[in-house]
Image 1 (cartoon, rainbow, N blue to C red):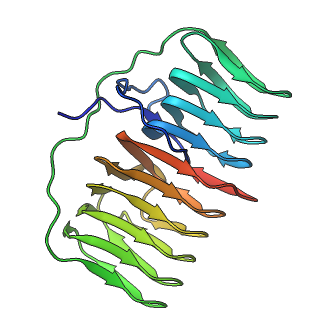
Image 2: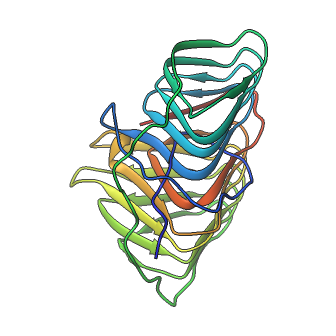
Length: 245
């Protein structure tokens, strides 16, 4: 039985809690829902809420939205949260922190668990420098080599795992509705992966991770929502990074 998900917006770190809290939306959308969340230094989010059982926000990170921690949280120097920070007891903070409003209580979230799904048996590999189209469907593992482009369209995709090399370009055609991606275990985005869309908006891209990790490299540009009730999400240190829903 899957744990109830936590909400996460950006990129995160490596620790696993025994029990994940349930999640809901106060603003109507979120960026990331995960068991453990680490947003590295200089991360910037462009909208949506973040929720994690264990949550750490790096130095000079800017969160445009609300943040909630179920168990504990830590804010490093000059981290900024434009709206509310909710936490059950105490939250460790370094110098120069800016928060719109502090709420010292647990945030109640409605259930948003991931349903069961099965990956396919055929792996998919996109070679270096290629430009490939993936149709909706169930696949095995997905590996995308450096400097390649991959194109997804409206519909649902299932993978056993996802691994990319640096400088991969993801293009999402949302003309006929959202794209939903389900991954059984493990998502790794290498450095400088970039997302782009046509025919819709970032909130129509959803990533659902049933287990494992979500590891995001430096200096990319990401769109969408991550729902990872039993996973840890880690965002690597970066010079500049943005994530939008």
